[in-house]
Length: 73
Image 1 (tube, rainbow, N blue to C red):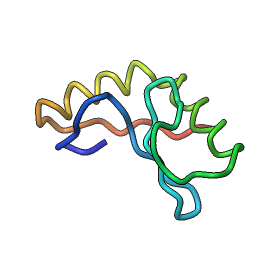
Image 2: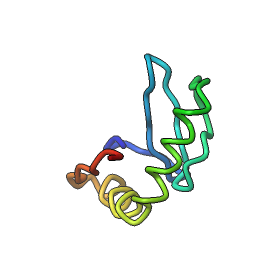
Image 3: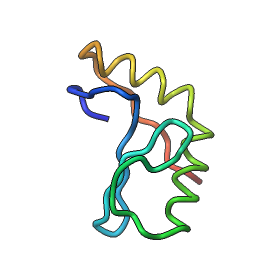
Image 4: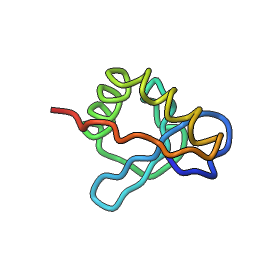
């Protein structure tokens, strides 16, 4: 997420120089990530961290510092 985010709520992910924007359900809404495995892992991560994503979204739109979210183990 970036501090100048815009609706709808989303986050950005990158895989092998391919980028995408994802909703908090982990569905790609924009981007060029082709790997189904990468998209599956991003979705898994998003579902595990949905509450943190929502909290960070609120912070981002208020211009506050967002928190780091742990990677998928």
